[in-house]
Image 1 (cartoon, rainbow, N blue to C red):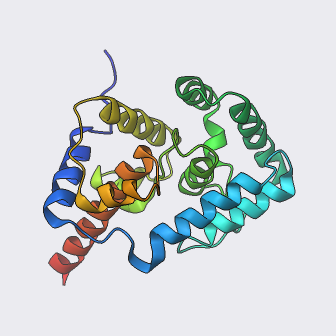
Image 2 (image 1 turned 90 degrees about the vertical axis):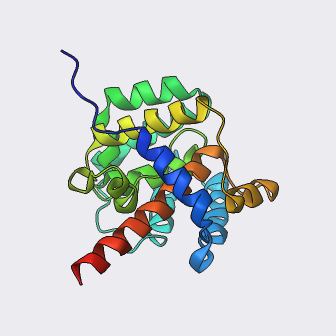
Image 3 (image 1 turned 180 degrees about the vertical axis):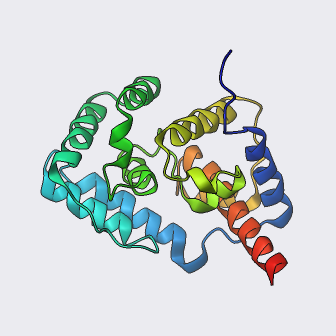
Length: 208
């Protein structure tokens, strides 16, 4: 019997529906501006070079509420090899299949699937969505936020939804598109992030 998948794709539409109705600000604290700066930085880095890759990882963690504490060269080398091959062939299914065959890569940056997902996103923003605790909350998977298998399911769900029924995007996302700010992968993830942030706020208010 096939194992039940932990990522429920219907939660993505829940996030989209909420974002359309709420039309939240998706650029709090210069979030989109910081994103654009990191995209620009990653185009300039030589990620075959460990020092440049380390600089990219520190930059990504400068965008997070924690800091980069671990950079272990033996753990990083498989990531750098994966990135080198990815730059030569950015075919999505090939990249995701290769990643699923070498899941430990998803713990390369700071021993964190969250940190590694952000690093990979800036390498290939059309392939790898960002994953973090707010998005995990949307899927009721906060307890598995650092699980590579969950991230790979999340990647599949994001692409499946983008290839499915046409999306009626929130106004804030349509505006970002008109300004050429992000990929569809990023825009869908941003709706999930905003929805998860709202869920966390509601949960906290319920506990007070």
